[in-house]
Length: 451
Image 1: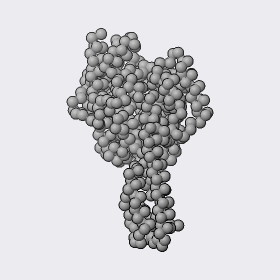
Image 2: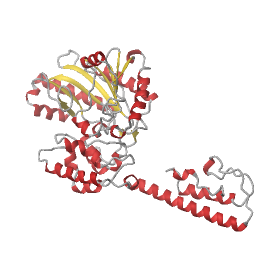
Image 3: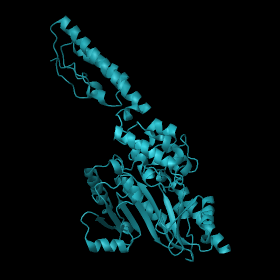
Image 4: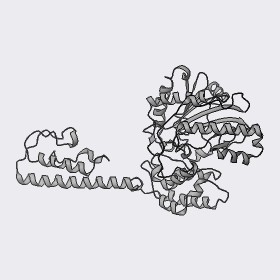
C-alpha cells in the first residue's frame, strides 16, 4: 500500500479548511515523485506518515498522484459542507428528529395554544411559524425543541417556560430564545452584546437598612457552568461524578473566612441531613419545573453542598446549574456580603474555568440567569406596601425588581415577608445589577416609611 496516499487526520477537524487541504496536497504529490525522507508529508508540522517513499514507475506514480488528488478534493468538499452546515445550523440538526418526538411536539403545541390562562413567555413567542421552523432541529448532543419547552407545557403556570439543555440550544433555537431573552432582560436584543465582567467598586455599596427595621437578611448569588460540560439534561452519570470531584477538591482548599466543609448528598447520614435542613441549606430533588425539564437525572449522584464555618458562604453543586455560589447573612450589609461573593468567585474561577459566551455572558440552564447570573435579594417586611400585592409588584417593577414569596420562586409570603431581588442580569455589569437592587430597596423602604 502506498503510504503517502493517506488523507491527513486534520481533515476531520472543523478548523482544517479547504485552504489547508490544498496547501497540504502538494506535499503528498511531491512525496510520490521523490526518493528521500518526507517530514512534510503530514499536514502542518504533525508527525510524518512515512519516512521514505521510492517510486519505480512513472505511470504508477501518475496513477497514485491522481488517486491522492481525488481523495484530497473529496475530503476538501466534505470540509466545506461541514463548515457551511455548521454555520447554517443544518450540521447540528441534520439528524432526523424521531416521529414520536414530532408527534409529542404537535400535541404540546396545541395544548399550549389552547391554554387560555397561560401567560408564559413560551406561549407568547412560540408562534406556529417559529414552531415549524424549529421542530425538526436537533443539537449535536441530541437536544430538540421538546427538551426546551416540555417544562413550560407541563407547567402552564410558568412565567418563562423554557430551559436550555445545552449551550448550542441558545443559538440553534435562537428564534425562540432570543425574543424571550429580549423581553425578560428588558430590551437585550439579538444584536446586543453582554458587557465584560466587572465587579466594580465594592466599597461604594452600603448597608440598605442599618437600623434593622425592615430587612431580615440579604443574599447575593450567582450561577456558573463548568467549561467543557453540558447542562443537566445532557450530563452523564460519570460527568456528574467528575464535576463533583473537581468542585469539592477546589472548595475544600478554601482558606480564611471561606474555609468550610463539603457534604455530598450521596450517602449523607440522617444527622447531617437534619443539620443542613435546620440551617435551610439542604436543597431537595428538583421542583416540578426542573423535573419536567429532565434536570434531575441520576439523583443524587454528583450533588452536594459546601458551606463555610461561619455559615455565610454556600455552594450548591449540580442542583439547577453546575454551581450556585451564595453569600448571605442577617441584616442589610450589602457591601460585606457582595465582597465575600466576589472573593469566592475569583478563587473558584482561577481553578475551574467557567462556561462563557461572548454575546450572552455566563451560560446557565435557565435563560433568566444568563449574563451576569447575579441575583441580589433581601428578605424584607414592608407591611404597608404589601397590603396590595399587585401594587407592590408594580412599584418594584419600576425599579427593575422582582417580588417573590418568602422561600423564593413559586412560593407565597410567610408572615408578610417577601423576597425582593434585581430582575435584570443581562446588558449590564455585575456591579450595576447589584446596585440596581440596592437603589430599588432603598426607595421601597423610603416609600414604606412614608405610607
